[in-house]
Image 1 (tube, rainbow, N blue to C red):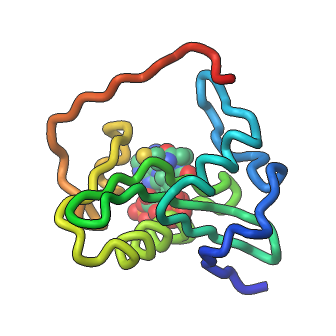
Image 2 (image 1 turned 180 degrees about the vertical axis):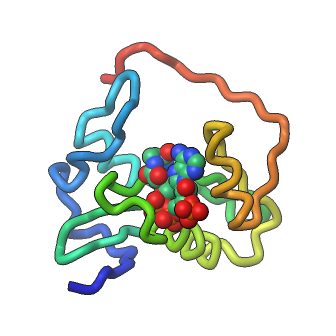
Image 3 (image 1 turned 30 degrees about the vertical axis):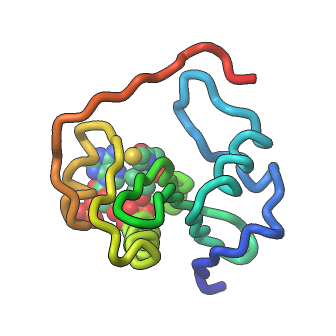
Length: 132
Ligand SMILES: CC(C)(COP(=O)(O)OP(=O)(O)OC[C@H]1O[C@@H](n2cnc3c(N)ncnc32)[C@H](O)[C@@H]1OP(=O)(O)O)[C@@H](O)C(=O)NCCC(=O)NCCS
């Protein structure tokens, strides 16, 4: 079955989020994960035979700036170009945006550099209390 990239989230269910958000210290509930995708201005899903195997999201101000909060591909689908394609498709949806920012672990800087991102100094504030 061919891999599809879709932006229609209407059929997405909380259980489609199972297997994602690996390694989060306080993993959000499936409902909260789904809310994050549905609340994003841009969300692209990678779907393989009806199964969601990856997604990428963007928040935008509609004039200058965008932020990419989430990118994840299920481990069994890593290394097949899906993550890169998700980022390329989100960037295509953001065409004309001045700045597209994201936060990532240092080891992923090379992955994003190939997609045109450069490292800058940044600050982030994380609330580590349990999510409701
Ligand atoms: C990052 C991620 C989305 C990449 O998805 P993917 O579909 O495997 O990506 P692609 O197949 O397009 O690209 C894989 C390339 O990225 C590199 N890469 C992926 N994850 C990496 C990591 N953690 N550290 C270093 N390189 C990494 C691979 O080495 C590979 O390089 P190669 O093509 O030279 O072999 C995926 O590893 C993932 O979901 N990771 C967990 C969640 C995460 O870290 N998300 C990013 C948050 S900012």
